[in-house]
Amino acid sequence: MIGTVLVLGGGGFSVLDEASPIDDYLLRLTGKDDSKVCFVPTASGDADPYIERFLNAFQDRAQTSVLSLFCHDPWGYADPTMLLTQDIVYVGGGSTANLLAVWRLHGLPDILQAAAANGTILAGISAGMNCWFDASSTDSYGSLAPLLDGLGFLPGSACPHYLEEPERRDNYLGWVASGALPSGYAVDQHTALLFRDGRFVEAVSELGDHPAYRVERGPSGAVETELPVRLLAS
Image 1 (cartoon, rainbow, N blue to C red):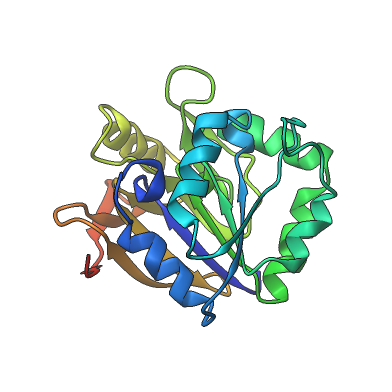
Image 2 (spheres, helix red, strand yellow):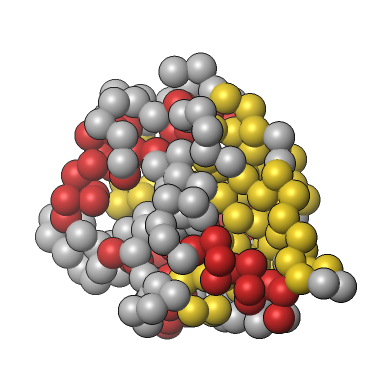
């Protein structure tokens, strides 16, 4: 795909009570002083507390909006083509499988691809990381499982919460080793990966000791290569 994507393994405004350095980094990527940022909380069923966290985190720092596909008050239903006018589309966490199903019913994949090609930055946390890849590790069905139904904006597979949540690492390594998931990227809480035009650019973190990895299938199992991570100033 053509465009910029920032994916978080966890963290950002959804976890931190203070300003998130990753969110500051995301805003700087636009090159604007008053960016338009739309939150898409589909994966959480448009949970009101999650929306409030977003609004509180970005108030006075950006022009905020929310795309509610569940028609929650006070947002109602907006034409998803509104995403074409945004500087950033920020996708929240929750169920990756439900997010993908609802988005396809509302035509978001084509809209998001067009927005990215026109300069809109796509970003997301957890499920909002998974959705952009070909495949991912998800707990959308209860237990962790491979999901081979991503949007394919980014090649390969994704695994958020890599060290934070039990069994994430072992399961992901096993799935890549067996071919159940293609090679990809594993990202811990508070760390993000930046991609441009489908190519990895850099890894950044808002807290120390939260790594990111490139995980590839090798002849004797999965090969885990730690990526350099740049610690952002708080």
